[in-house]
Length: 140
Image (cartoon, rainbow, N blue to C red; front, side, top):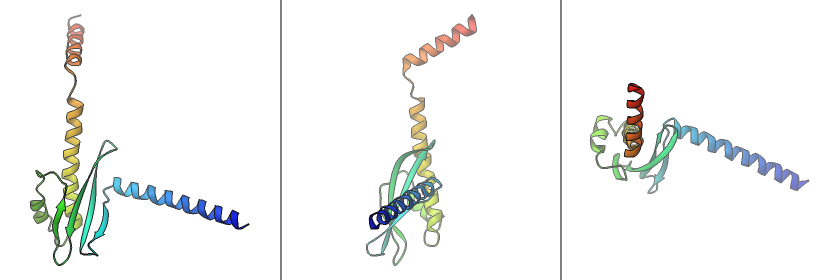
């Protein structure tokens, strides 16, 4: 009897874990951020995930000191994204969420442009075949 109870409890816990994993996945898709405390609560590390056309592309990490003042300490965000300017404009000291949203928008725009560029890169022979087909259709 105890084995059946343990098995059913294990199955219930596995189902709950799956449900929570799905909720976390949905949270990330709608703009949620993974956040982890660092240095005994003195800092926070945020993971910003980029998505294009429903496909996860890259994850970027941003570590911030939160005590005594909020400031960016480390990150792997491309250097052309102006983090200091974004922090000032979104008032990082009082609204971390607005700052993270703005950074996330910049990262998704960057990754989206990279994906669009990959779609535009068509081998030359396909371009010429396509052009000759179009010309034949127009003249014929």
